[in-house]
Length: 331
Image 1 (spheres, one colour):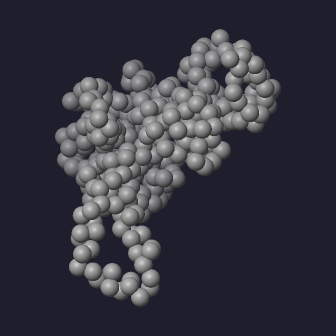
Image 2 (tube, rainbow, N blue to C red):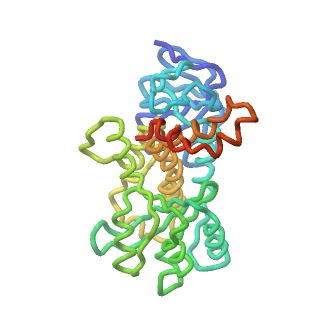
Image 3 (spheres, rainbow, N blue to C red):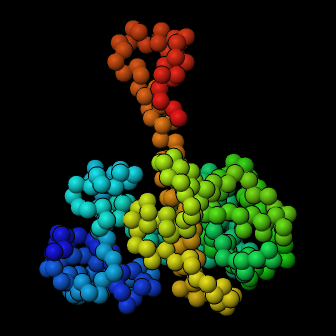
């Protein structure tokens, strides 16, 4: 079976012998045993090889197609069979522009090893957001775990705070204010360890938490499943967006290697990946959980579309407005 791609298609592939990285390139041509790509780059660096370069089926572990735009071709991620242009198994289920934006954010992190002007600018910037993502690299997975790195993301910027080299004897008060703030939603995946560290070591009770691991379980139950295992954030990205399974690297067992300073660019990038996808996953899971509610709001907002203007004042103050809402499906 030949590869069913068109010239110019942007492909994401993982090779069997290089499972620590993901390659991207533009499809030129191919047959049932190989494909040829140009403008090839690694996900973890920005070096581009013009090519063309051939990749053989026997060496390829996964291939994904990036959509140029949302369109209607894979909009319904819940029903993955509704992808008329290509099999959903071969397609990353977010637009190419969004995929590229997230990748660019992973590279354009702001690393902070001291409480300098960059830190204060970042804290002031974070205070303007209603939703932020928070991840961490800890020293050990025990009750005595400490913070190595804290990763904070907004929709368009990502910060890495290096606690091992901070020139501060106490927890940064500006960051503490953000963690305690009830008006800022904090998105985490499995929030238990980090909230425990904050509470036990610093006396900080983080407020307004959205846990994507809990949301994933709730979505699976909503769809009729009986979950017996939880998913990592990387597994959620693969399940909901069809990302390559090894794109998201969080399962590094040797945490002692994270103590080495100065921190390498490779580790900074891997740390950045822990935070960059959180808001994307949160928004998607929230939309599924509140699907009926949003449908109800949409129907109510458009309930006057078929009325003539003379009837609008009466309809707006109609005592039966609650009956209108009551007849809508909201479960």
